[in-house]
Image 1 (cartoon, rainbow, N blue to C red):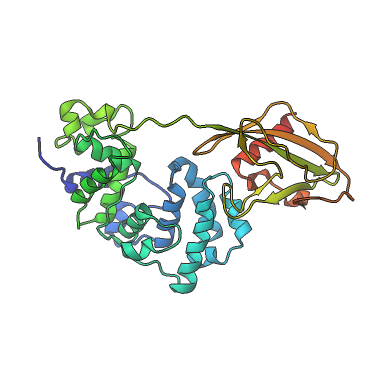
Image 2: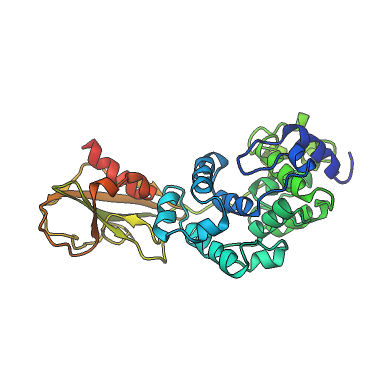
Length: 350
């Protein structure tokens, strides 16, 4: 068994098996001189944070069609960007996306910096994203470590320390392997290896380009790595939302505060979300409210949510106590975050 994996072996595999992704420059294209667009690399990496490739593809294509450059995105209205982001989750990313785009467009003449430290100074860019943009967009030898890379490193070096405590060691291991030749392709190759062959379950060790130096394969421990510290059970919070429809088809909505969960997104007026039971709340408009059967259920990163949904049909001249009406032709459930879409879906099922 060889002591250390060779990046050349992985790159040879990547040249033949690289995933085809809408934001990626293929190895042959890069070799032919095609350069990645830093804006598109950055956009894809922000979208991919804690989100699957399958979920991101359509959002990425819509964003780049509507806002093909960082200047276009910087000039976009906040509410338009938040509406396009609706359903992708982790909405602070969308707010930081706009902040970063505006810094790049207005303070950096529309050019993303190429080095890690300058990228890290931009809004919404952490160590992983700074490394990914530096490596992939600018071919800098930055170490890129996501969940796929952590899994590959844990198996290559047979690291049994549970995550997240193992992160520093796995990052150090990844750093020792990062080459100066083709670092952008290498960063994507390691992620592809983890996403395809070195998968969480049933890793395809027999056809892995790094099977020879892999310590976990040699010891028969690959399938059990990386180890993870058991997560605490998620609590359940409860709340109430009010879905008021005016007789002309307009819906009563509110825009949530910029800070906090679902910040800046459209949603239904309602109560706070608390554990135990839905707290009492004042309805946003005087009406004969009907409580729907069932609940709208959604799971966030740190808790489960169960929403009681109340609906009402209101006349044209009824004053609102909170929120604002959105005309029927301007309303689309797709502009709402997923939890609010689920609440709306109950109204169509009743």
